[in-house]
Amino acid sequence: MRYIILILIISLQLIAKNSSSEDITKQAIVKIYTVAKIPNYLEPWGSSIQRSSGSGAIISGNRILTNAHVVANNTFIEVQRYGERKRYIAKVVSVSHQADMALLEVKDKRFFKGVKPLKLGVLPSIEQKVVVYGFPMGGKTLSATTGIVSRIEHHRYAHSGESFLAIQVDAAVNPGNSGGPALSDGKIVGIAMQGLTRSQNIGYLVPVNMIKHFLTDIKDGKYDGFADLGLTTQKMENPTIKSYYNLDENTTGIIVANLVYNTSLKGLIKKGDIITAIDGHNIEDDNTVEFRNHEYTSYHYFTDQHQLGEKIELDVIRDKKPIKVKATLDHTADDLLLVKTTEYDKMPRYFIYGGYLFSPLSRNLLRRSNRNKLILSYFATQWPKEEKKEVVVLLKVLASDINRGNYSFSFWPIDKVNGKKFDNFDTFYKMIQESNGKYIILEDKDGAEVAINREEALSKHDEILKKYNIEFDKSIDLRSK
Image (tube, rainbow, N blue to C red; front, side, top):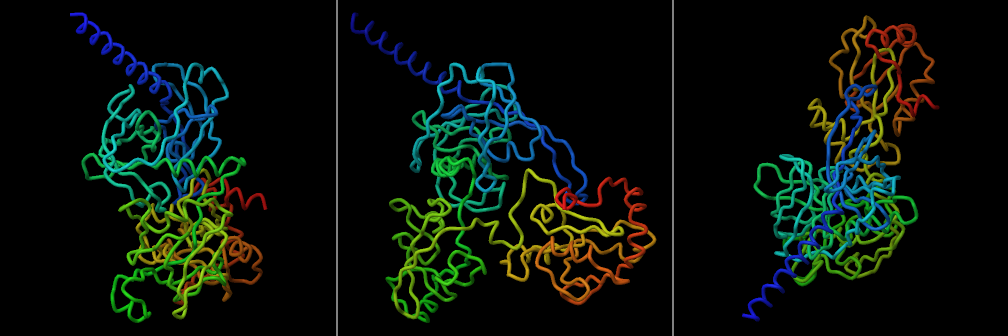
């Protein structure tokens, strides 16, 4: 009988201990309320207000870890701890829109009273159990969903459109869950990022190694980002291509198809080089590397392990001879793209001239319209060149008597102004402003033209703005010049 009583006492103690541990964990889970100003890229002088909520976790240094998309474009943020009704004002101190992570701080230190910050764990194994905490739709209280790690590989992050390592789990990840921690053995192994539409119980986490990279990056008070090599590559799974390059069956790698003009690899890597290893890790013919025993993902995995400014080593075969190349990682994807990744926390750039609305081409614009989708999407796949770093479009024509017949021009990419090419939006703006002839002739790459009578455009400019209730004829960055 005494043994039975002893067993019951021990069992109750274990239950109490587990319950206490779970309660301590829950104390560090945060609900985030945001008000955001959403820019209208089709009418770039305007915006709308949107309210939403997400989740987060308190970590060391009195910081709240969450997703960038939870607080993107924010104008006001409040946070609320689990089990409390009081809300506290918070602000963003660091953000990575690239990798969908953000850190918040709360000035009122009472918010953190009695909280034990959650610690970061290590990258979990396949089939490892995880618990995802957060405040998803369907209720107001804390939710905990249990699942296992299904796979770990590179996946496109919906927030930025860039591809990074991601953890796939079968725990439910719903709107409102975003930014909530995924725990294993009481430590953060990832934060809930996005779900897969038209599927059941497929969610994705930003993995803990990406979180650690972000936290290390911002130690100097500045976010630098994840590096990009600035090259495109071709797989070598086809036996004939391997034979053409005189590679034996046991040699694997990828062919350099193209390089951007300002890549860190300029002068070190050439088109037609075969990269066989990165930081000593073999690159397979299908573009992947083994990052753990029997687990493969994109070779960019090893680039992502580096901070900007660090060096990377590549094993290369050039003209049948093996060489080693060391390069400094100086650029992020935005430094190397003709059309930048999706932008946040800023208003779109634009200017209006005689009812003609001009803007640089952005992925935000591509998401908002189907006009000229095929042509404009092509630009988004291209590298910039020294003579063309940005695409400018005639976004729309604000109808008036001086631009009759041109109303159909929208999302129209411009190649020349008065017969001269330009490299970016700033140069284009300057050319329009400094034009002193009777006409301004805009031309696309196929030779189609739009003619603007300069004197008429200037004389009717204010009248057109007033008619369409537009306060400013240009974005704030141009108004300050």
